[in-house]
Image (cartoon, rainbow, N blue to C red):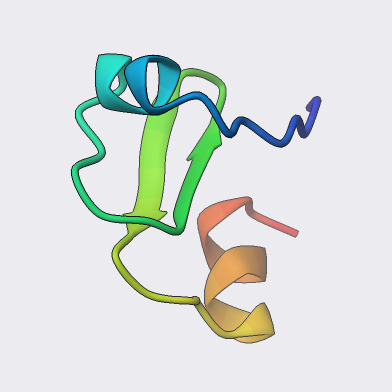
Length: 47
């Protein structure tokens, strides 16, 4: 999986994320509008 920081509002909105921060993995929204805990990130990424 590749992680890229996106700061362009147009690119962010292409994912349907209307409030930041947002976390997208494999073109799927994992979280947005808040900072997820490390445990939540691991669970969503199946780590």
